[in-house]
Image 1: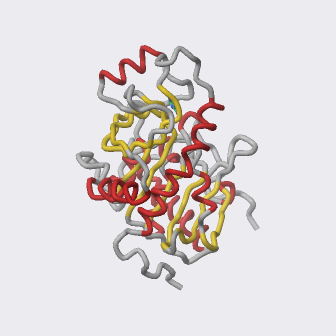
Image 2: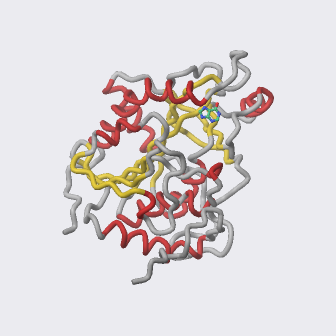
Image 3: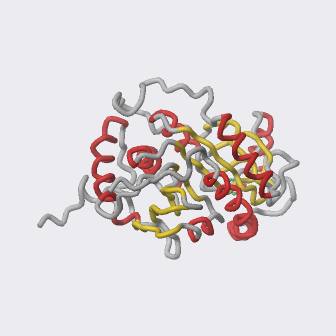
Length: 300
Ligand code: HPA
C-alpha cells in the first residue's frame, strides 16, 4: 500500500491553476462518495458564528479536511475543519464548517475547491456566509447583510493559469454573481422569521490584519458596506463553474476607526455567537422553501 496521499504531501501554498482542478476534484469526489451517496441541492459555507447550523443537520456524515485528498487538516487546535453532508429541514445539503482562507497561506485554487466540489456532488447553488466588519456606518454589530455585489480587493483570483474549459469559460461573466432570485428568497425567509436583513456590497481583502481607519474610509468611498477576509474567491469560482450564488454577511463589529476602540478576534467571535443563531434560522427557512426542496437526494 502506498501511504503517499494523492497529489503528494499537502502543500497549501502550491499554485493550483484551473487546469489542475478536474483531476483533484475527481479524487475529492471519490473520497466523499466512499462515505455517502447523498446528492446535495445546495452547498453552504459556514462563516464564524454559524456553527449552530451544522448542529441542525439530520443524519450528518462528517469528513475532516485531513481526510480529503490535497486539503490541509484544520490549522488551529479547536478549529473545526470538516465537510458535512446531511439534511437541513429535510433538504439534502453539503456544508463546509471552517473554510480555507488565503491568509493561512492557502493558494486561491485550494481556497475554492470546496465550492467546486459542491458542484461536482450535484449542488446547483451555494450559500456563502461570513463574519464582517461594518463599513456602512448604519451597519452596527449584529447586522445581517445579504450580499448584493462584491469588490475583490485580494489581488488574487482562483482562475489564474491555464483554464479547464470543461469546468468553466476562460472569461467568466461577473455581472450577476449574487443571484437576484436567491437574494429575494433570502429576504422572504428573513421576513417569515421576523429577522431584519439589510443588503449591501462586500469588500474582500486578503487579511489577516484588520483594516486601518484610512482603509475603512477608502472602502466606504469605493461603495463597500462590509469588509472581510473571505468569500469573494469562492463566489468567483462558483460562478465560473455555473453554480448560483447567494450570501449573507454577519456584521460583528463596526469597521476600524468608527468607535475609537481596537478590534479583537474575541469581539468578532462573541458577536458571531450572538447573531449566528438568527442567521441560521434564515438559512434554514431559505433552504426549506427552495422550489422542489423536499425531493429525494439520495442516488443509491
Ligand atoms: N475586517 C475584516 N474582516 C473582519 C472584520 C473586520 O472588521 N470583522 C470580522 N471579520
